[in-house]
Image (cartoon, rainbow, N blue to C red; front, side):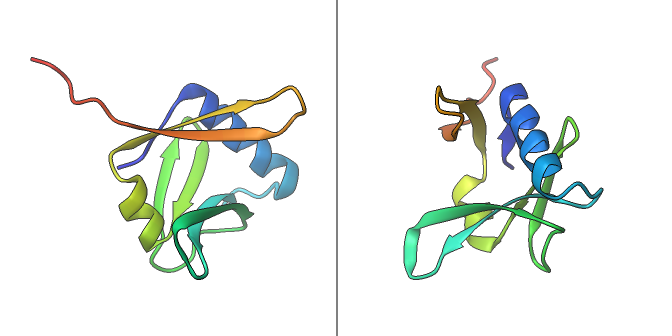
Amino acid sequence: MLTLTENASTIVKTLVEQNLPTQDAGLRFSQLDGQESALTVETAEQALPGDQVVEQAGAKVFLDETAAVALGDQILDADVDDTGSVQFSITPAVAPTA
């Protein structure tokens, strides 16, 4: 399942609060129509039927079926660049060593 870093959780919460300040709102990742490898990111009032919901540190992320498969067992990080744009990055989760 997708994991959010502390930065990602903070940025997701901020984006959602600025755009849709409701309790059920979150950030939704979904497949871009006609582009199998591209995902869109947008604020959403609530999860849609079939969405996987990831909640971490107060941040809510909704993943459509395609995004849930693509982002399963990944780590979502986020930063804000010098122009104020949010940059998301995805890295594979590292299995714990014994």
